Length: 434
Image 1 (tube, one colour):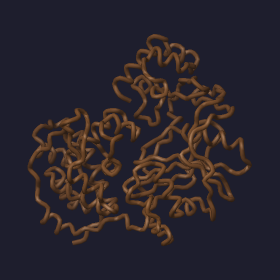
Image 2 (cartoon, helix red, strand yellow):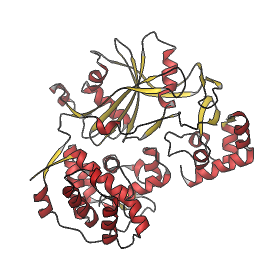
Image 3 (cartoon, one colour):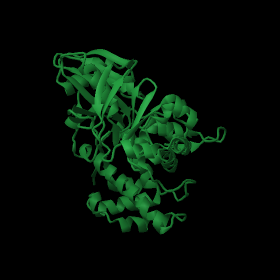
Image 4 (cartoon, rainbow, N blue to C red):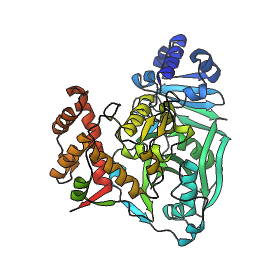
């Protein structure tokens, strides 16, 4: 959520005294017309809180969430345990990336392939094309029967904190793709780039809607595609809103070993250190795969920090953090002709033209070796037998302070968490031989 959206919500809460109403009743209803009038922003955008971090500051401070309940009507409610969101912890860290070997027939398709996926629909369609969805759902046949937006029928749900029943009727719901097989109907919510969490409304509303229309089981699936890997989670809802559990979780690489094998000593010798200081702050973007996703998906709708934030459901500042991290790694640069925009560097173009995941990961690892702080951290990682958990944060802090002149001790210690996250990424994606 950006600063302007924070300001808009602050206006709404102050002018309508919403906090006192929520304090007494646990929730308050508000119309889209009122939101737009008081906040001076589009209600649809003001109410789009798809991740925990994308909520406005006032929602975070007072443990609030928002849901659409009718066409042009919303409810804001207490959600002290954040049950409106599902949070991934370390589940995917412990899941083996499977190599999926599809039938050779898919290679004859020229208009869609794994090298050119830049959107959710392309990712789903490709997973269907190579029969990955059939494998995951254990269905011999799947038929695309649902896609796009529609108005819901009527259903009820209980708000998390106070168990007040709310009626939902005629709200807009969207299904990225819905497939029917012999054993069930599979509703897919898809994203480009991994998510740490997501608002369960994205799965819950379609699930409630279609559960009332069919006798077959309706199975919600959260799907994301990041740096050549397909991540699929099959969920099961309980009786109450917020009751959601994982049934099955798998990740797949299509016809490619997801692990890059490199000769550590050879790379250390062959990659020179770049002592020039990038004209951006030291990175504070923890997910290297998201940086890669920005580059591979880069286009007219992904050229500013706000566009990046919207694309990945970031808080506004995170869009800036990730763009700066891409600049630090030499993949993006600021567009001098269009203030606030970014363009790909030659290296960024090279990454986007990579035909596989290993090419991208080798390029990233090589860039890390060029940067003095990360090269030293990688050497430290080797000294710890490539076990990132054994890396001492104080040691990383000292490395950053030595190499980054503009970074004081407090800031360097905070940035050490990014370094440790990138070292963890290295160990999850690269295997070293001597």
